[in-house]
Length: 123
Image 1 (cartoon, rainbow, N blue to C red):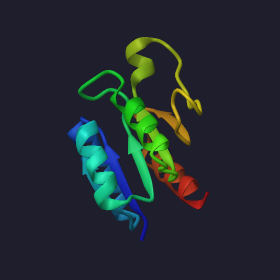
Image 2: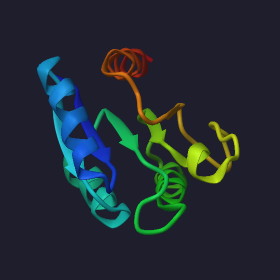
Image 3: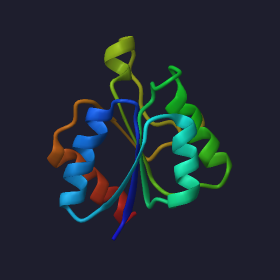
Image 4: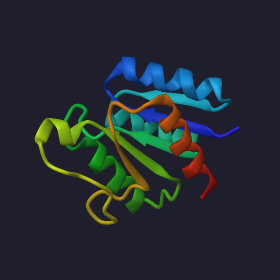
């Protein structure tokens, strides 16, 4: 069973994503801030990380992804965010600035989320 960690300050979104993923057999863990997320990565050792950009700070998710990659975390990271809608700017993965495996806008259809999770875990 693959372990998925969702780090997002939107508790309703985290709960909804967790329900869909658990229904598909994933072991889901949750965190609601960058600091708690970093602690959970160490404790849980997730196979996949689903990460929001804007939490306590506007760039918490980006900083967390950068810190994890610098620290050797090689597991897939799915950035799930509404930052483009908030800022009006187009964002995407970038190996240096936003070192994630995939970048998806919220809201995301449950079927698309599940497909992305399966795809990333196969790599």
